[in-house]
Length: 377
Image (tube, rainbow, N blue to C red; front, top):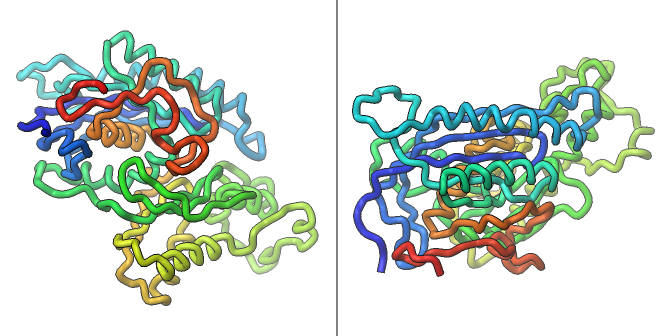
């Protein structure tokens, strides 16, 4: 069985506080397809409109990285005002209300990043989201931060589907996912919304962390500013400072040409796998905005005969942490019948792989699954 008929639409509120970015989004979803189809989420693309999306990044300029207490204080100071501004975009349905910036559609659920990330920072967002969910009597959905990064290109399909046509979400599963950020570098085989098998990941240092360390070693102090990787990419090197002092390598363990091992892992999997049927590699996370990484991946795949493999990069503004991707991941989970209980807590480390010790995305307690008729199991 599956639900039939068209759903008029709804609004969703999302909160992201996993690291040093405080972000809130309010979106409007018009979904003309069933929420569930034979127990699985439909791949039909809904239409998503952004009513509110703002972000405040903690000021860590005086430090050589993210200071946990500075980030925590920034969340405490900025989250409530952002939520207040977002909720003002909600209005009771009124046919005479023609303000395009307000939603006449009811709030369906409250989404929030549950992990992975800094526990104290996650707790600020979780506690706020729980309060809103209880006050408004709406379901809560705790989102996996890295899953949200992986699904960002599918969000773009929904944002482009303005006519609510019968288009499909792209990329369709399966696809390869490369997640590159300050805390993660991993290659996954994404076969469904909640199934992401880890093929390779760094054990010592993530690419984003490596770029930050390299930037602090290379740039003069007056040019250092977060995000450090972006500052390094923008820096115009003059002939006198093209080389990094060799003595620095004794103190800083840097992987030479960090993008190349990543590319070789992708090629190794494509060459050795006889079961992968996809044609897309999604590259997401903060480092996905790096233009050199984009160039290396595309040129290497082309040179090795994989011109047919599509590389899917989100817009630069959606590569870094943001609440819009959290809203979308929650929308996809909700369409698959998932919500969260109000007793969920923050998760510092959280795998995406079901075979990992923690059980992957659906491993932690707190998920509530509804059947095709909307009844909770």
